[in-house]
Length: 175
Image 1 (cartoon, rainbow, N blue to C red):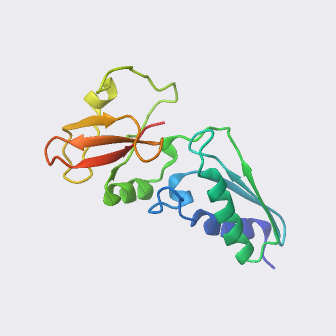
Image 2: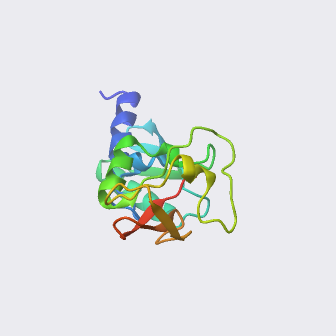
Image 3: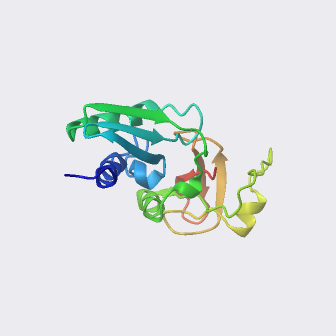
């Protein structure tokens, strides 16, 4: 007989292996949005999922993909709950997730070491944080990059260009 804890660990691994619909190079576990799995019976499970930001359009696709994977594993009742607290942060992205973003050509978010609000400077192209921890080009590693647009293919990313190799790239913004 499989214990609830062992079953939950197995289901957490399965749900965590689901690729992110907007960044399929990352799994939901690597992105850090999968919070918990609670088995309430041998074929009934509840999953806690936190979006990268409130209103994220990918949350529905994530939920559907998790349900599909867990049902294929024998779960008859799968409930995916959107959990907003604690809020997701880019610090929740695993080291493996950051490595994969870099390899995929997306500058990973810089790690935040505080829990306070993120300062916002309107009209500036560089922030104080960039002066001490610059956004590095994922192609050549140069710290000499510039912001082209605060938004890129998704609201979570900004469009930047490397001034050394001249390649444009996405930067996963710190949240």
